[in-house]
Image (cartoon, rainbow, N blue to C red):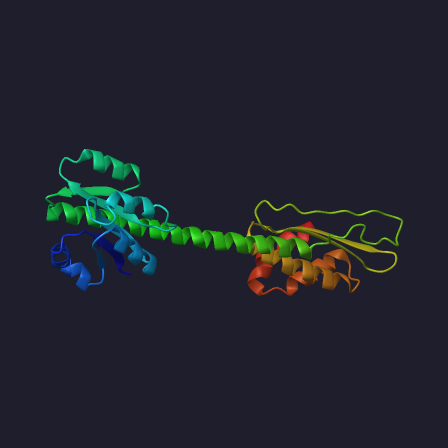
Length: 259
């Protein structure tokens, strides 16, 4: 995707020079240039084209100068890297621009080699920031999904206590605290009949989402098989037999010993 660059300068010949210097990048859609003649025009373009990520601006311009523009750019909540252009030796303005958030600077008379190096370095920085922002958004989305998965997993396990208020002969309480957002530990209990209570505690090998999925399937299978009245060892082995063969072989010994 082309990086969109806004050049702000009141010199009428600069647009032609920039287009000529970067004609290859324009032709290959690496760069897309926009032009403005003062800070006010630049702000209008930034508001109508939020995809602009690099601004190269002169400091001395009519209507609104580059330092005032730089301060206004700082109020925009998005990635924008600014290169300021000033007269050679004008260190006061250059320092003021850098203190207001400018990423780099160029001096006049402008060297095309220096312009090429500075602009490409700034564009590369923007691409790195763009990728970092994308990865951050992906991580946030994953975290949100994991939070939902945590709530779903906790809702699967028994959470109403006392579970059998009409039965006074025993008390039960249980909780599961996963090492990560979700995990493979689980517990369950249920009445097999009026005289027998089924109690299951499991520890799936591994952590995270795969273990949580395995835990949910295991709990469902164990409960459904146990309610048929089979002995614990037989119920565990019968539950394992319902898994696909690869899963069954990998966890058969584990669940047999845990039973």
